[in-house]
Amino acid sequence: MRVAVRYYTKTGNTKRLAQAVASAVNAQAQPISVPVDEPVDILFLGNSYYAFSIDPEVRDFIRSLDKEKVGRIVNFGSAAMLNSTWKKVKAEADKVGIPMDTREFHCKGEFKGLHKGRPNEADMDAAAAFAKSLLNG
Image (cartoon, rainbow, N blue to C red):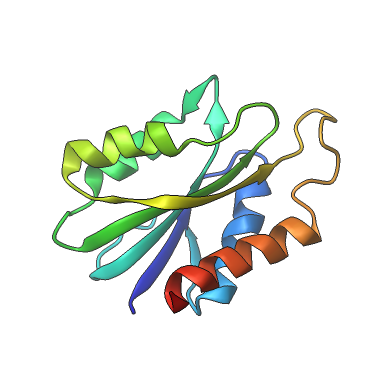
């Protein structure tokens, strides 16, 4: 199965999760500034909430994707206060005709002292296990 891992981060939390996911699926974690040029079955997309939505850069990245090259998007990320960005990412993916997997990984992320130390090693292990489970089943 062909996979790619892309992420957007302001604090480094999502980058750390992306590296755990990428390691688990034998891929390279790359920022969303790196286009998805090769066909992939799964695009693991890491992101978070910024001002109660996904960042405009994430929105623009999704809109730039070629539906002929991306089989489906799997969402992952962390946030200090809000939970999943899945609905926001799906709304953008729908606009370009790329399916979203209903499964995602989300954990708490540290922000201004809240949830200090998160994502932690247990979160990284859980993200890796999640990614592996998608490839194995």
